Structure formats: structure tokens, C-alpha cells
Image 1 (cartoon, rainbow, N blue to C red):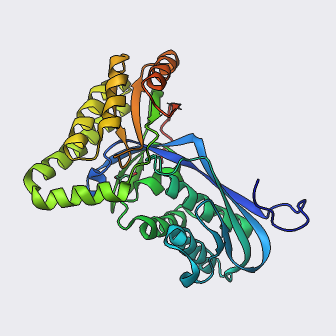
Image 2 (cartoon, rainbow, N blue to C red):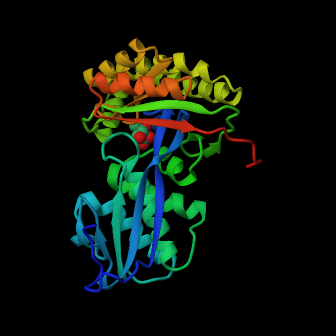
Image 3 (tube, helix red, strand yellow):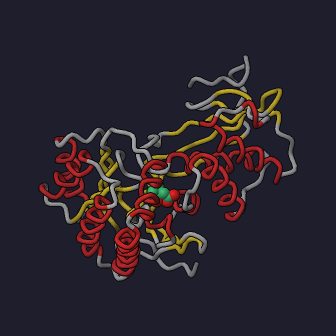
Length: 329
Ligand code: MEV
């Protein structure tokens, strides 16, 4: 498994924490500018962080960096977000930054627009709290994960960390938090990965630049994406799942006009439509990464998954969001 806490490999880990990937159904990019977004957890892909008791300063063992993270100066930019969140979690627990190694094991692909960094951050905070027999409050989890995301990406809206931490379908508005959504009917989706990592930071900056240079038209597009997110919430709440297909198509058009799609994503979206999908759009930051496609049922999910693989998708996942009943939350 790569990491061995001590010579005696039989020593068990202290604790571990996990969190799912996230899937944005609607509102990526617009959410950065104050409009609503709709997101789901994607539990088929999960990040896990294992906490081991080890001598010496706090350490990270991850695909991006392995080494001590107790001192800010020693940590490269790629691991700074996790390091800051880990130190702050320990400070909130009244513990020193030593005696632990945090091992990251994640099957959420990086740069796919599926919230890999947020899932790892949420898993890391859960693992640290679990190492001391504690469970973080939702508020602490969100604050710490947001801290990690801010360090890693600059100006995250918070939708990724909310979807991953809450683990339920949400409607999220920056500064107002997340509202859990009720889904009277299950939702069948297919996610297809272009195989080219996206560049969320660059795409977010490109939209901000467009907002400065072509403000009226860009603001209209962002507003329209916000309206589409509200329409998705209404359709899902009314059990009219098929109605979100055309909303996906409209959103992909707006996102393409904003400059965050690319030829590869457009080709996958076109292949999904040709195969009979009810709607398809890019998901996440774009400029690489994934698309999300609406299916009617499990059989259509299979059919679309095969069609998208034939069209060149590097990986496909069937994502089924079960019904969510109103729990009064
Ligand atoms: C990234 O998953 C979603 C974006 O809207 C950025 C953000 O919300 O921070 C592109």
C-alpha cells in the first residue's frame, strides 16, 4: 500500500476519515459570482485519509507530497491547503502538531472536476478528529475544508466542500450555505471523463476576466446559469427528473459561451445527445475534466456509458442518486 507507519507493519492505524467526490449538476462558475448551484455527492469515488501514530512532527504521505507539514515554510504549494487544515484542526482540538502521519488514499481523479481536493480535505479533517475519538461538527468541517480549498485554489465558492461534507444533494449559495434537497424520484446519470485534466483555477480566472471586459453579456450568462440551477431545484423537487435534460443542454451552451468548455468536452456532449441522452453538459471547472449526462433508468445508463466509451471517454461512471425524503432538516 506504499506507506508503512513503522517497522512492525502489523501496528494498526489510529483512525481514518472518508468523504465522497462531488458532482455539480448545475451552476458551476456562476456560483463563484453569487448564483446558486446544485450538487450531489458521488460516493462511488471516495477519498480516505488514514491517521497513523508516528514519532516526530506532523507528516503527510500523499501522491502530491510526502514529508513534514508541521512548519508552514517546509510545505510545497501543492500540499499547503491540507497542511494548513491539518494544523488548524489540531489547534482546534488543543493538540500539538506532532505524533501523527496522515496518509491520503483517494480514488477521486485529480483535475476531473469531481472535487478531489475538497474530498481529501474533508476526509483529512475527519481522520484527525477521529484520531482523538472526536467527530467534527458540520460547521468545523466546513470551515477547515474551506481553509484548505482557499489555500489550494484562491477563491473557491465552497460548493465542493459543502457537497462532499454534507453528502446529500444540495442547493448552495456562497455566503448563505447549503440547503438539502428533497428528491421524490431517483436520478440516473452517467459521468464521462475526457481523460484530460481540467484547470479550474484558470477557467475561474478566465470567467472573471470576461466579466471585466464584456460585463453585461457575461453577467447575463451567469444569471441565466443561476436561473437554470433554480429550475433544476424546482424540477427535482416536483419529481420531474426528465425536465432537467433540456436545462443541462442550455447550461452547456452558456458555459461554452463563457469559454470554459473545449472541443473534447463538446464532442462528448454531442456523442451523448446522438446516443439519445435527455441532456448533457460539462461538470465542474471545465477546460478538460468531465461531462454529466441525464439517463432515464439503469438500462439507459448502461447504453449511454457504452456509447460514451466508444466516443473516446477515458472513464465512465454510472451515478444513481436515490430518492431523498423530507427529514425536516
Ligand atoms: C469547481 O468544482 C466549481 C467552480 O464553480 C469553482 C467553485 O465553485 O469554486 C468552477
